[in-house]
Image (cartoon, rainbow, N blue to C red; front, side, top):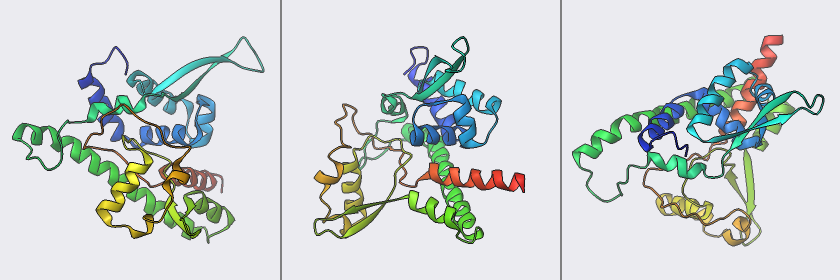
Length: 245
């Protein structure tokens, strides 16, 4: 977390980011593609550099993106900024933890604290589902061409259970979470009684993906298994095509 920001300032900036679709889109792009320059990011999102630059400055000050000035291969005297998500991003997002726990009665002051963030969270999720609908409509309107088929397959992830049967999972290309993948699916299984997950060899599936985290799991978790970045990428490609048609 940036030393220039207090926890309250960080929390306020985080909620402002979550309510801003462009900032979420940019974060999602870095989550999908990793380290990128401003030029690469603008090309990915089909947006102007000036528009993106404003959001990058915000996210860099917030501390969730790190920046490096790199000389161009074509001209070593000219530099370009490259950005990527910081390794401790979970610690920064922990600022939105209200430190209340489930199964305990929430006092009035905590309820007052919770309302505005809960509204922001609901609007954020509404935006996700609206994007999901737009994505599916775009697939349909394309006539389900090869590009649409390839896009949909990008959003899916398959694993085999212990008997060798394929089980489809949503690709999680965008998330703020303090759960490990194992904990997340165990929680889904507990809450939703998803029997199809019970026979998966999670040791094999998650062997390379798991890591221990010193962060205490908060009750308030921002998480989506919708492959939001892939939806936005496809929609932006279709929008760019319509401009040229």
